[in-house]
Length: 163
Image (cartoon, rainbow, N blue to C red):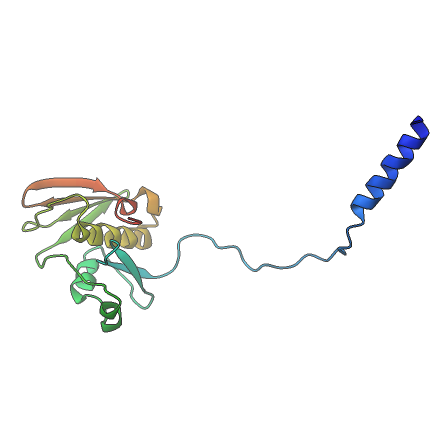
């Protein structure tokens, strides 16, 4: 094959490859890109697959201790019908935060297993509140529990999810 003929064949192949039949279009707008954290509070309840968050967009928290009232209220009737429940024992709870580290004081709480759903409810709900209150990145929030048998943790919410 001569060099001139090879060049023509290459040009024809290149021309054929570019003519795929799709016409160019203008730029399409996909909307605003998501940014930051999602809006609103989430409360975590026990389910057959581990803690599950439910949105409470109308709820605002002014301090971490507000979380305990929300958890004490339990799931709504519709959420109970979906198999959600609260397994967090009644008691006195108090939470403080410093640079993304939340400490829960619960004198009568016995953390029996680091992976129990009551601990998961507490850790994930407090982590969500910490994110909303102080803007801490969700993957940076750590929660420690000071209870009946000493200190447990620090835990992160993702340890309890997706089992």
